[in-house]
Image 1: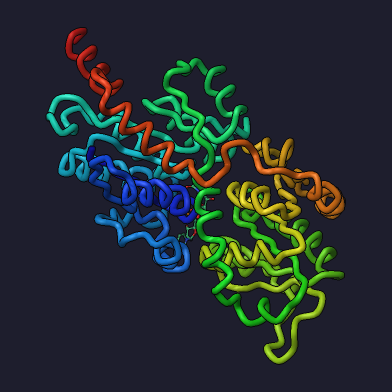
Image 2 (image 1 turned 60 degrees about the horizontal axis):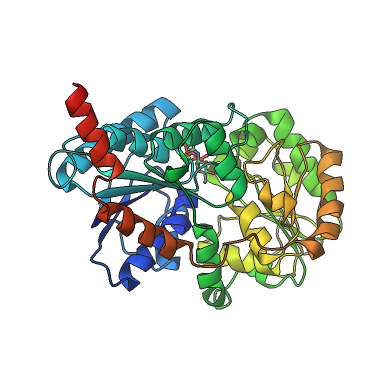
Amino acid sequence: MKLLLVAGARPNYMKIAPIYWACNETAAEVDVEIVHTGQHYDPALSEDFFRDLDLPTPSANLGVGSGSHAAQTARVLVGFEALLAERKPDVVVVVGDVNSTAACSLVTAKAYGCAPDGLGRPLLAHVEAGLRSRDRAMPEEVNRIVTDALSDVLFTTSADADANLQAEGIPGDRIDRVGNTMIDSVLRSRAAAETVTLPGSMERTPTFGLCTLHRPSNVDDRTVLARILDALREIAGTTPLFLPLHPRTRERIERFDLGAHLTPLDPADPPAAGLYAVPPLGYLQMLRAQGRAAFVLTDSGGIQEETTALGIPCVTIRENTERPITITEGTNVLAGTTRDGIVRALDDARTKAAAGRCPELWDGRAGRRILDALVRRRAAAGSPARMTARAGQESG
Ligand code: UD1
């Protein structure tokens, strides 16, 4: 089986890694290749993660870079179409909800003639299918809906995702609840994370909070960003709070002249209470930082899941989440974006964390389950991709 794993942006790498590792451990004959779209290109958002996750350099990088949604998506469409025609894989696996995910799904769903026999198209599998925030102003929600509608196999992390897909009319035989590959990566990397060093100031601070912020709805509007930074400053008044800055957030803080909310770091002293910006962390550093943090505040999707698996109190600075299981079973509290809401949610999250538990199947074996399912589906006569191709030819 010739398998192509697609990665485009930072939150994708830890989701493909467990499938890649499973390919190297299986007895089945699997020829696996990783393709990077180049949506994220800074080493801190790309190469460093491949190293931390023990992944090889991708065999191809489409180099699409940044741009408007249309421009970025269009560059992936054109680049990935040419790549599929050349590689002719049996299976394309896309993960998560970034622009690269939706674009590669669209190409694969129409790539007749790009399967190894030159007739059908590759099977399209979506890992982390079925999550819904029900907020279509979020570009990721649009990407999720498009990708799920087109995928032949939908690998889900939780029962709520299965229910979302069924409600959208996706047949049950295409949905396969396998667990969470992001948590496979956490469990496998925890020991290695203990060996890395955090940026100096964090390493020297015995107790700290950790915050990540990058969502356009939180950082692209000056009023909203100022309000959130106010709340963070209040929390940082009692516990040092570290903010590893995504390039988008760094740029917005500068452009909106909000740098005064940040506390300058004195390299000589262990940081006292204050809000400290630090550069983006690598994957292992981020795991170690979460493990050591007294609490986490975030607008990321994946960090809601990682903190649930690690049992760390988590406050999500958003109005909604596509990952409700982290609230019903885990350590997550949804805060909204008001100053009082965020401060109050932190108290709730601290109280709640003790009762949190790791959801079913978030056990470190999702990557293996996915690979086994793909091998089985590919071996089955009349796989969905080929049946679709034949049906198309007969009716045409
Ligand atoms: C993307 C994903 C988001 C994910 C996030 C993780 C979409 C729609 N969004 O958002 O779901 O949570 O990645 O980080 O796909 N930039 C750099 N260096 C890079 C990449 C980006 O400086 O390597 C800057 C550029 O100014 C760029 C901006 O970040 O314009 C936004 O990058 P983009 O990939 O469009 O979206 P993210 O905000 O990173």
